[in-house]
Length: 319
Image (cartoon, rainbow, N blue to C red):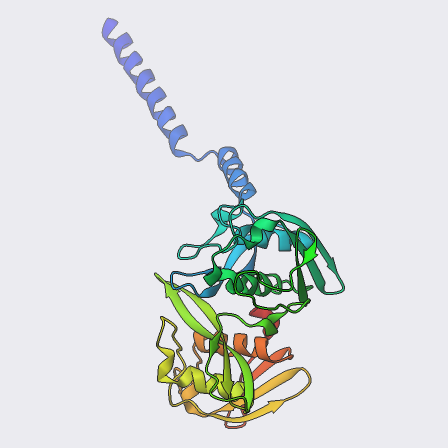
């Protein structure tokens, strides 16, 4: 009898353990659903980025992307400017390999955006900058703020007064600034004849991250600006100062058709990275299109080869 009771207890205990084992194996759908919902709550599908121009290790202003939180143009301008201030509240958004340029104690006193012109009033600390960076600071402000669609021009104030002259370099500033002010400027002028100003975007890298560096060149060349852009990007001289171009040196611009809203470019086969598939490198597209965006008032760029449209882009999509 005792033996039977013992066997019965063993059977009951074994059964209980087996039942617990099955419960452990069967997934709890409610728990999994809850965990999934909690994870989804932290996924932000509406992350918005915007270009900004920050100093790289070679003191070039480079075009990189940062996350911004606002959809309001005025607030977007403020967010971007806060990142430009050294040690400011936006400093944690600066990508690796870059640094801000505005002096650390600079305050943004007010921002007023009206009819495409933004008036920005800074505190006097804005001018507490090294002479070598004084003009570049203005370039960074103008190029960064004009990445906002609603901004066509910038008026800079310091403690309520319009900044019309830089105190250290003695450079005169127009009242309203736009991208015609230039950026990362180089002067290749040899005479006063055939003056031209062209902004060309080059490729640069930090670790494995690609970004673009605009350089405004002043030169004696009255050709179409796009012809100068292509010549510069195919030149071996491009590989200096850590600025690069991925455009094949044998690339030729055969024809240019400029209309009200688009620029149509016809190239030879060297525009392609793979001529069989007619693939154009992304870096080539960006350097050409960003350069066009700064030099022409068009909305689209069309790449042609042998009377066939190969690629078409809306400039707004790459800004």
